[in-house]
Image 1 (cartoon, rainbow, N blue to C red):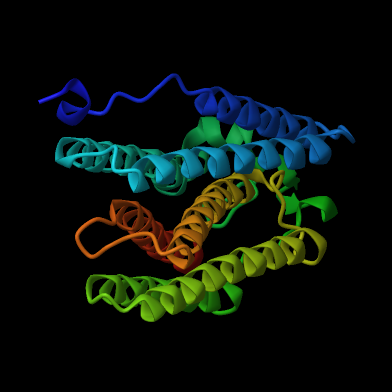
Image 2: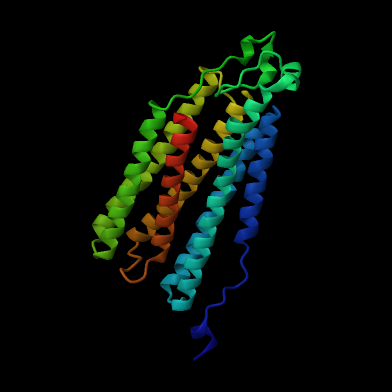
Length: 290
């Protein structure tokens, strides 16, 4: 058995470096935006375009290697293990944010309202959720710029929940079509899934616009505003990444790629998409409902 047949060793890749540069520019732009710099939004868009370019190039390289028959069973196992560990890291990522939300709501906010020290430091503060924190209180009353409206659960949030759950169903339907050799079902299911994914992102962007322009709810609206946008914003970013992955799978399906016995690229994207669905259910319950 030749070395190539034993295990495929990829050549030196520059895509991880390009992806790192794109993420760095995006985060630098976000930091500038938070500090009121006019270059912030432009940097964020540029960084995201670089990141999308990286995803496109890297996915293209991987698909060509797969179609040329350069992978064997052991490589497939490695890919599966890598994707499992990646999703596990994402679970831990969101667990930290859910933990921060729980700590804030159940421990730190009540502590601020208890005892003599709390009364001296933050007179008039009440342990209620959602809260803008003690900073917006003067003589126990909210200042005009501290007033805000909490995000409701039964408007766009509930609609987005239905959309994302429906996208999970269409993704599974597409997978069954692939396993049965029904390529039209595969393509139609993927079109529906990608469309629903980007519709979710569009509605979330509209929700953010309403929060900033009509509800007084921003990243600067105390601990409630920061945890709300932190959790939903990172989830929205993950939905974008998942939709891009599924778009790549859709394009490859149009090109005739994937067979019932060899389609891990589809499986990896589907695993990630179902993970995004589950995380959103947690967000809907703990951020919007409770």
